[in-house]
Amino acid sequence: MSSKWLSRAHKIFTICITLVFFLPLYLVLVNIFKENDKIMANPLSFPSRFTLENLKGIITRPDQLLFTSMWNSVVITSISLLVIIVSSSMVAYYLVRNDSKKTRFLLLFFLFGLMVPTTIILIPVVKVLMATHLMSSKVGLIVFYMGYYVPFGIFMYSGFIRTIPRELDEAASIDGSGPLRTFWQIIFPLLGPCTSSVIIFIGLWVWNDFLNPLIIIGPIKGTTITAGIYRVIGQFSVNWGQMFSMMFLASLPIIVLYLALQRQFVEGITSGSLKG
Image (tube, rainbow, N blue to C red; front, side, top):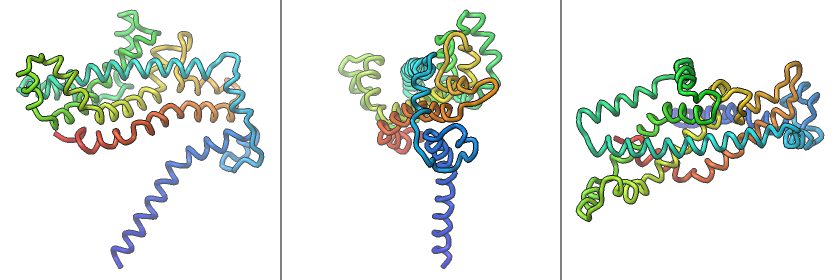
């Protein structure tokens, strides 16, 4: 009787959690196809008459806000991921394969970076970027992402690399392969599941980031997709239909990315990234 009650309670709890997470998606989906006055009157209601004017309005905006913001986010996210994956995987390989007090201290030093929220270091970051003339530029934002998310990449890769036998390195060394060649030709191809996890985690964080692009890039030099959603909000009124449409279109690339890497993502989380 007790186990049956626990099983039923577990199902009810799971359904409640699912509904909580599904509610924002439901709000976006139903309000895309409703007129603005119907959204303001009852945002939770199902559309009585479907309309595509909201999607059409956001796609055909004269300022091309959707396409400009999407392109900026794609460029920033792609370059940030490339730089972070290359640098963090190489650093993690060095720290794991050269196990000593110095490398353990360096790994601990990098892990401290995971504990610092971006809002705390934002003012010093802005001052550094201004001093290096990287403020109000995409390069400055990418450098900021690299400095902040490389510790997470090192944490993920170091746990996964520990599961790869050292005999592979020794065999490559006997064949005359140097450390750099060994890493890129033998070790890195084995890090596919971990790389997928890093891409999804960091890609999601960079893509959804709002405050840092808004401050570092600014409104003049361009905008990312999250700042673009903010710009849909007018000074005196809000076109809720276009705002929900922008939110829906902004989430599509991340959903596609997750579906494409889902199998390797789960494998990377369960088989290596949290070991060691």
